[in-house]
Length: 116
Image 1: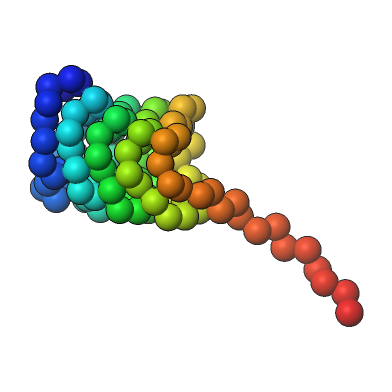
Image 2 (image 1 turned 60 degrees about the horizontal axis):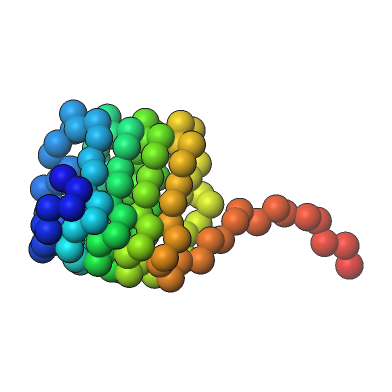
């Protein structure tokens, strides 16, 4: 559904499409946050919502998509911190694009013993 001038928000009912394998909504005019229910799309292996007007924070529920291979959220209005722990279940992820947002990445802290 690229380049279709779709507008409006992604519905919270998006999570009901559990058999959905690919979702490409790039190059539209979709606004609002990415709904938390996106984490319920357990079969999803490709998600491209780049070049829209999505805002809000990176939803941690994206980390529940264990079959996800490609995630492109680039060129939106997303902001905030993305923790490395969000990706711990994404063992198949080979491509992640998030440029063009105001996101910062927070790697896991490696604990070193502190001697006093």
